[in-house]
Each structure stands twice: as C-alpha cells, then as structure tokens.
Image 1 (tube, helix red, strand yellow):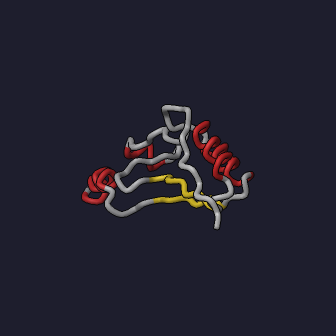
Image 2 (image 1 turned 45 degrees about the vertical axis):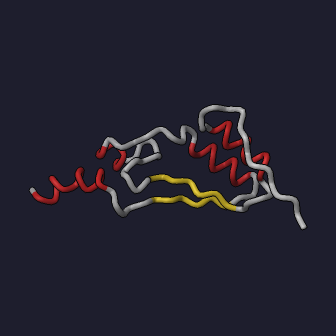
Length: 102
C-alpha cells in the first residue's frame, strides 16, 4: 500500500508560475496530465493577444507565461490539455449580439 501524498503547501501567497513549478516538482509522480483553462465559462480569456479577448475586453493575465508553463509540464512528462469553455458565456453573447442584430 502506498503512502498518501501530503497536500501541497506553497510558500507563495499568490498563484503564479513559481507556485506551479513548485507543485510540479513536489507532485510530478502523482499525476500525468494538466488542464489549463484558456477561456472560462464566464467569458474570461487567459491567452494574451487573442482577437476574442481584445474584442470582449475579457482578457485576464492569469497565466503570464503560458508557453513556459506548457514547457514545464511537458518537460516533467505530463500531457497538457487546453480547456476552452464555450457554453454559458454572457460576456461573449453581449459582445456579438449587436453585430448579429444589425
């Protein structure tokens, strides 16, 4: 029987790339994939420089170094999955309705 993994406790107060790198280093054997939200159901877009994020003014800098984060997960041997929510997005609906009705 394997010992249960201890919960991850980061010395950092904010969620940033350093916290994620610490998590990968401490728990890399306990999972084989990571899901990164690129767009959330409430309309927030987490990828810098996209037309959708600019058009809806919904860009949030939650993952400042997305390419670096993906690189870190892959170098640790994890699969990386992009999550793009498209349902229940009032921000997107509000942005495109004027275009659709004109």
